[in-house]
Image (cartoon, rainbow, N blue to C red):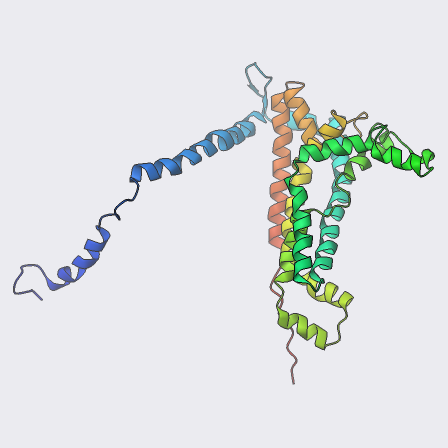
Length: 325
């Protein structure tokens, strides 16, 4: 159909308002597109240069013999075969396993207990005060925390003085210098393990539980302990999975605490972990290729662990069972 006042078809006139909207000028006062694109590409450029390029470089150099200041040479899987026979690296894996089991149990259980205690408080003011008290220590840098614990474990530290005051001199040890106590002294840093972030994540999950579910459990005569194990625990599995992933990543990648407390993973190799061994090979022994191989193994483990957990750790929404008549 043709418009009498125009040689163009009617449907083209109908589309003209849409086209005009698309071509409408930007609002007055808007910054130039070049500035917007520059602000977007600038952080992306820094991310690419300082994160992705080093990661790709480490991936390549894991298969090379590369000393700092020297030319790298491709050696294939030589570094990984050497790691499989390296007694120091194997000892660090054993230390990581023992340390990881202790830290996992402490970091996942204690914050849940504290979150339950806060959740059961009747006064909202007291709940807020407890949450604020847990968040305040987070402003202290982690390095300061480890330095304080290093002083606590020293020969003239708080722990030694306390045991001496209580008449328990026989219990005094060189907590970070004796092989039997060094690793467990490192593991106990952060006691009583009521970490603010973990507690708040659990508390958010508990506060998200529908009041209908809690009222139904109360009507059915379910006690407080029963509600915790049958209602609360299944409904905070998503938070548990998140904290599990975050904790495992922190355990595998973290070595700052061991470095500050013992400096070299001593005594001997009793507190050495793969992250610290990677750091030593890269910046003390100048074996960057070997260090990159350790880092690649850590990355592959964390990637496989995260994917497996997300694949098989199901956290479906709780659906109350309906009674059939």
